Image (tube, rainbow, N blue to C red; front, side):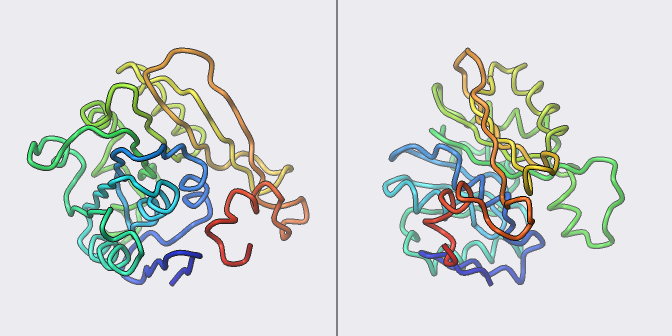
Amino acid sequence: MFRFKQFTIRQERAAMKVCTDACVLGAWADVGAGGQLLDIGTGTGLLALMAAQRNQTALIDAVEIDGDAFGQAVDNVADSPFASRVRVYQTSIQAFAQNSAQAQQYDRILTNPPFYTNQLRSPDAVVNRALHTGDLPFEALVLAVQQLLKPGGQWWVLLPSYEMGLLTALAQSIGLQPFRQLDLRHHAQKPVFRRVTGFSQREGTCETHELNIYETDGRTYTDAFRNLLRDYYLIF
C-alpha cells in the first residue's frame, strides 16, 4: 500500500508497483484544465488519480489489459475522492481505440508503457505483460495515440532514453513532435535513467529540463524533487 496525501494506492494484485519515476511523470506532465484525459496502461490507477488531483474538473478514462491490475485500479479509484470523474476499462488500447462506443478524442494522454524488447523474460506472465512490449509494441501504441489524441492535444510518455529515441522517431512519422522533455537522474553524478517527453502537433524546438531525485549523498531529496511531489508525498 502506498498512501498519498489525497488518495491511497493498493497494489498487492498488480505486477507493477508505485515507483518514483511514474510519480514524476504524474506530477510533471501538463494535464491541462478541464477536458478529457486518457491513461494508457493505468496499472493501479496511479497516473489517473494524480491527474484527477491536479486537474479538478477533467473527466479521465483509464485503460488496463490485465485483469488483476484492472480490479486493483477500480478499487483504488472507488476509494478515492475522484471516483465520479475516473472510469477504468479492462481492454487493450488497440481494442479501445477501435471501439466507437468507448473511444473519443482526448486533450491529454498519459503513458508509462512497457519497454523491454529482447531482454530476459520473467517466468511470471503478468510481470512480462507489464514490462515487455509484446502486447503493446511501440508501433501499435503510436497508432492508437494517433486515433485518440485531439488536434492540439498533448501526449506525455515515460521511458528510458534509448527507448524514448525509438518512440520519438515513430511519433514524428505521424506528425507528433517532442516539445518538452525532462531527464531524470538518481543524482547529479548518475546517468539519465528515465525521460519524460511531451508530444504535440506543434513545430519548434524541444524545451529540455533535468531533475535529480537526490543530492549526491544518495539519501537527501533535492529541493526540486520535494517541490514537484509536495502535493502528493506525505513525507513532504
